[in-house]
Amino acid sequence: MAENYKYHSFCRPIFIGTYPINGSFLDYSNFAKRQQVYHLNIMSFGYVEYSEKLSFEEIYNYELIPDNIREYVNYFFWEKSEKNIKEANRLKESYMRLSIEDLKEAKEKYHDINAMMVLRLKNL
Image (cartoon, rainbow, N blue to C red):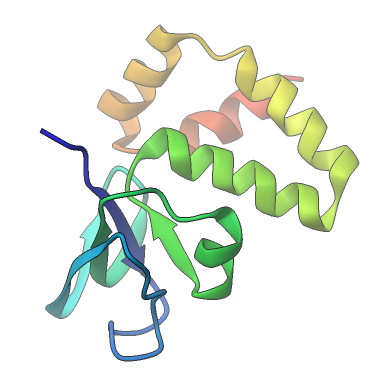
């Protein structure tokens, strides 16, 4: 079974022009009201699904957030590097020191990776 890729819209409901239309587009869904996505620590209006990953440029241009935590972290570093390459490299090196156990602890304790990353990065 092929993997589907989900991207949340945190700025606006899904509508024509708010997501990339390409050959891998599968479906979209709007929520009746914004919902908390606990593992990403965001409020989402809905999501779009694709059969292939979107490029970081597409994610950025349409203001989407990847549902997969690792893809989200990689996107986060890409976005930071576009704005400030030195700071992004420092953050990425710190993130690479996180172990699988740290990631599991963050998911269990904080329901997302952001809080754990902040605590870990403060100890540089």
